[in-house]
Image (cartoon, rainbow, N blue to C red; front, top):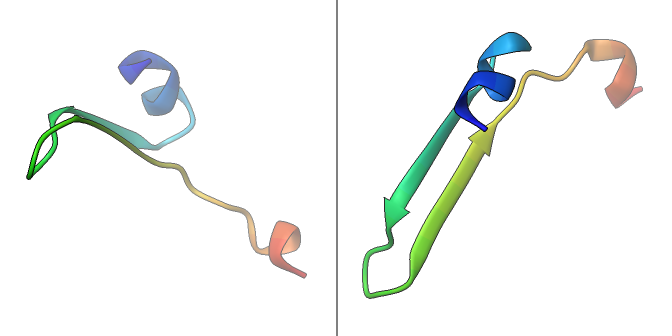
Length: 36
């Protein structure tokens, strides 16, 4: 999953979540046309 996020210019963070559980956070770029 890290590699797939990186191919589009994004990042992925995984690991233990504060307070318990598991964290999966993906940050992916969005083109301006997609927001219109």
